[in-house]
Length: 77
Image: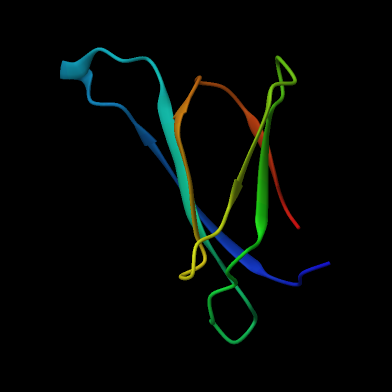
């Protein structure tokens, strides 16, 4: 298990693009503020149960660029 702090930004697609999808992105860091690369981040849509995973890059950054609007559970392993 990785002990990490996680910051998450949720962005809504531009209204001019008329795309109903959103994006979830963030960075996984340890208690000293250092990046945690190679960490698996999972999002689960609470309404549909749809699961998506991403792996953090060398800077601890992960991204889910096209997600349906809704409530999500986010786990980090």
